[in-house]
Image (cartoon, rainbow, N blue to C red; front, top):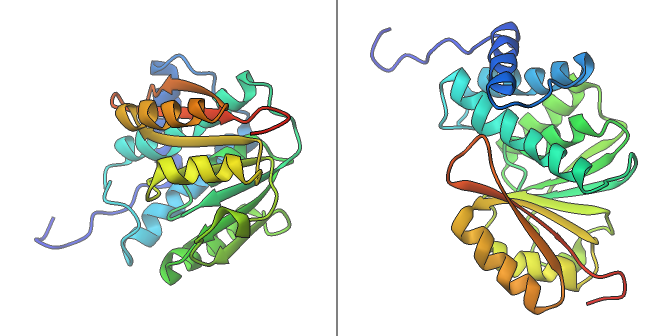
Length: 228
């Protein structure tokens, strides 16, 4: 490859094979055909756009399957095990390249989503990908910098990954009653810290180590039905 030349982005077919291997090696059941198609289309679009604008530093397809696709799918598994319903509204903060929000929405095809992203080129990518997925009737991308949880629509779940000040946002989302459930992707250390804060205000928190990232964790938190 010539110096400075972008690598050829992996095709959806190549990503599909990598995804099958990743799920099998981690003991995860492969999603239905339509779902796996949506997951791999999103990732293929990410790599296609990434040749023009910087959306991810992960250039390798197999690593991208782990750190993007599989990490978001682990959120689907956690929510199902926690009894998530078939219908609901997901609000995602700082949606960036669409992970984890679009991955979670792929696993819950009847859910609606509102994705917040302030950077124009990322908004363009998200809207294009939502259109390619055929989800324009259920997923809205808002170009907006979220400053207060109170400005968010009332939802069933709020998600974020790599969002600034996760401890403060987790507390605010649950205290302002924006949503009864919060799911966030953090380092294991940050997850413990956020969980301790939420426990002090009466919320229940569960930390789930990620199979796709040795140092990462999911934090699934809920507020009590009558508070806090």
